[in-house]
Image (cartoon, rainbow, N blue to C red):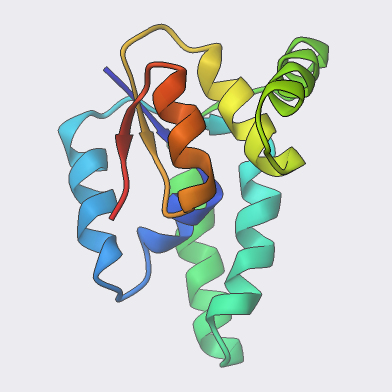
Length: 134
């Protein structure tokens, strides 16, 4: 099985929140971690929304970047963009959610889709992913 981490899961893996355990357990179950090329940008922006102190933000960014170095990245290329567009026509999705789901859809099955974002869950389930969410 391959573990796909969206931006919310990547950041949550490093926060002292109850959802952290769920994310870390999914990551521990399989060493094959994947994500889209969008995830680092989205994660860095998310850090500023979840951490108030500059030192905490800096530490969190370092942890996210260290984890990023261990993740296989699915490129946001034309194929991914086309699939995201198709998903957005079929489902009420934001662009970033559609890109994550399109990237994960390129992976060989089975895929464990890890997210803290409830908007992605129904579409991820409809694509046949094993969804892990707190």
